[in-house]
Length: 69
Image 1 (cartoon, rainbow, N blue to C red):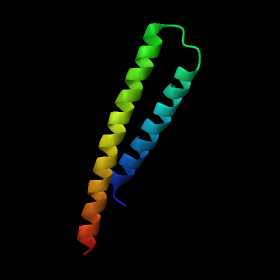
Image 2: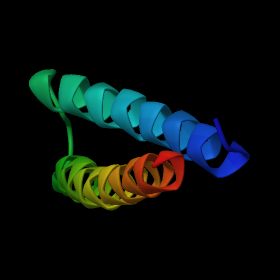
Image 3: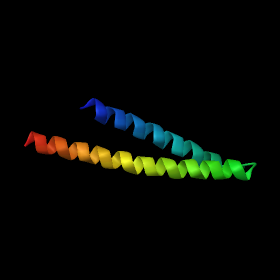
């Protein structure tokens, strides 16, 4: 497995943990509009980043499959 692939997996795991943490935060009683808005924005950013990472991982997987042939 390439170092780029490993790095992307680690980044994906971190973004997933962060997204989960902020979703749990929103389930609790948030005190301010800013706190709620900031958490929602971060979740959106994390989801977009996860999409990008997953696309890149698929590209790497396809490359390695074509290289193996």
